[in-house]
Structure formats: structure tokens, C-alpha cells
Amino acid sequence: MDWDRYLFINTDLTVTLHREPVGEWVCPDAITYPERTGVGLAESRMFDEKGPIGRGTRTLFLGPR
Image (cartoon, rainbow, N blue to C red; front, top):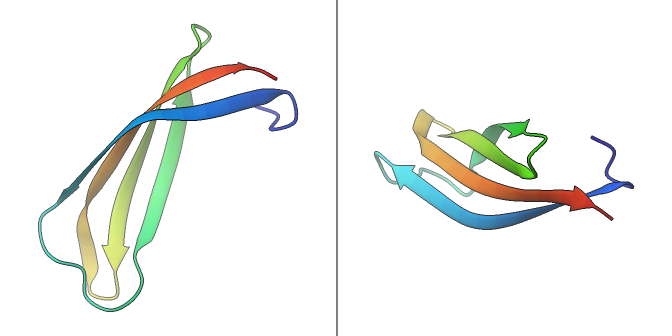
């Protein structure tokens, strides 16, 4: 989807960690699933320097600018 033509608003965020992060950085590996209904879902796998630490999900409102 073209960022100049559409807006993406996070309406909620859920983060679940199975351990505390190690170090200063967390890397999200994210994918977004937009739907024609104007609702979408974004999922993230989260990693630190030692490996996987958890997941995040976001519900999205999608609409024209």
C-alpha cells in the first residue's frame, strides 16, 4: 500500500515476552496483513543479541488520506 495515499493507525498493541531482553537493542521482524475492510493486523517476532524474546501484535485501522 502506498504510504502517500493511505494512513495506518495502530489501535492497540500487545507484547508478550518469554524472557527479559539482553543488551540495549531489540529487533522486530514484522509483517502486516491489510484487509479491504479497513482493518489490518501486524505481527512481530522480537529478538535480542541472544535470540528470540517474544512476539507483538497490533490491530490497524487503514484508510485513505
